[in-house]
Length: 306
Image 1 (cartoon, rainbow, N blue to C red):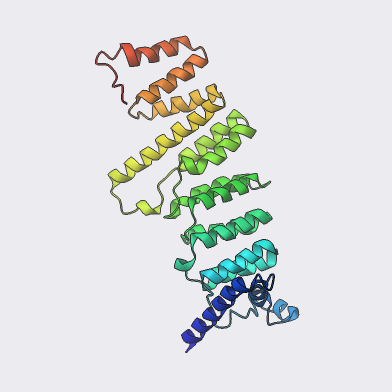
Image 2 (cartoon, rainbow, N blue to C red):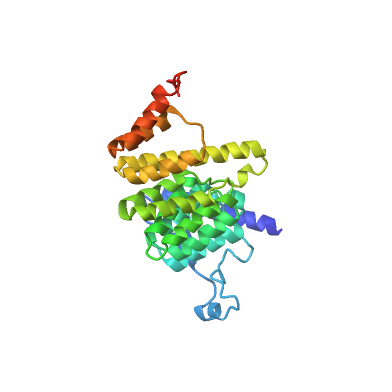
C-alpha cells in the first residue's frame, strides 16, 4: 500500500510540473506552485527548532512517506531555485535528493544543476560538503562539472588548497580520472597569476598523487601500468606545451628534464621540443647535443614518422 501511495504522489507531482509548462503562457510563474508546495513546511518554526536532530526536512510534506520525486520534478525545482535562490531552500532540496532519490536516478544533468547553482551563488562550504559526498558515493558527476567545481574552489578566497585536495579524491570514483584535461585549468590559472615556483610546487603535488580511478580495479597490472604511464606522459606534454605558449622556457625546461628522467621512449616530438627549449634560451651546447642525437649520432637515422 505504501509503495502505491508513493507512486501516486510522484505521478501527481510530475503531472503538476508538466501542467505548469503548458500553462506558463497563460499564468506566468505557475511553476512556482510546486516549488512553494515543496518548500513550505507543515510544522511551525518553533516546532522545527525543537526537533532533536535539527533536520531541515522536518515537517516537509514529501518526507512523511519517504517520497522520491523523480528526476523531472527535481530538475524543475532546481530550475526554479536558480531563478529564486535561497540558501536554506537549496540545502533542503539537496538533502531531499540525497536522502530519498535512488542514486541511479540522480542523473549527471541533476548534479550539473546542483553544482552550478552552488557556484553561481558562491557557496564554497556547502558545495564542498555536497561534492565530497557525491564523490565518496560515486555519483555520476561528469569530469566537466567537477573541473568547474574545482576551479570555483580555487578562485574562492581561503579554499585554494581544498581545490587541490578534491582532485585527489577522484581516485575513489569510477566517473572521473585525474589527467591533464582535468588539471589544466588549475595549471593555467597558476601560470597566469603566480610565480614559477608555485607552478613547480603544483606539478610536484599532482605528480605524487596521480593514480588511476576505481574503474581500473579489475584490469591487469600491465594494463594499469600502461594506462598510468600514458596519463603521466599527457601531463608532462600538456604542461610543457602550455608553458611554451607563454614563453616560460626555463620552467618548461625543468618539466622537460623531469620527463627525460622517467626514461620514456623518445619521440621525434620530444626531441624537437627539447631543441626549441634550448634554441630560444641560446643554450648552444645542449642544442648541439640534442641535434646530434637526432640527426648525426644515430647512424640508422631517426624514423621521420615518430
